[in-house]
Image (cartoon, rainbow, N blue to C red; front, top):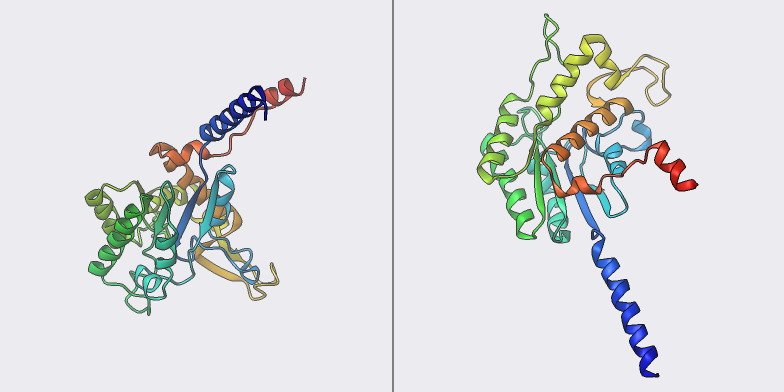
Length: 260
């Protein structure tokens, strides 16, 4: 090949590599947690985990891998070998969003996890995530819909949410206090209107629930989106690098200008 053509080819290759290097690399955001976060089967619709709309917030450099499972606690998530595949797959720049507590805290459930073990399991998730140069993010458990006689939202996760906050502080981990922000959202909606956020159905309203549904834990499509938006707001407030990968919506004026 003539020297001139060789130099031109080399220059073109350098330009191409510089353009590729300037763009953010692809990362994966793993979601680990329980049914309030998980992807639902069609037979459960309109029940929706907040991790489902969450996956649509990001640009093409982000893959959201939702590993959350119904009924799981930190203990059963580990015991069923659901955590290890995530830990093995992690690469630098990835994230792990960790939200447990709903099933850990109930002594009558098979998934029950003692307070000490809950703390140890959260610490394990954090340590093993960091070992892969990925970023752990701890989330307090999202609120249930429960109001007292005066119409004030009750904190049904106080003990286990406090453990999450303590681990986040001790390990210096980004914390999304979803328990607190979701309670505030429910209070804003009020006793009756907050039903719109949950899988509340009257008999005959949906074929998946012919007898109706009175569910104050799992979300409707609207509720899942609202909870996901709370998480997104804190990602921005925490100034995580992930915030730079949120889909950028162009204004109509910008689109019109580009079209001209």
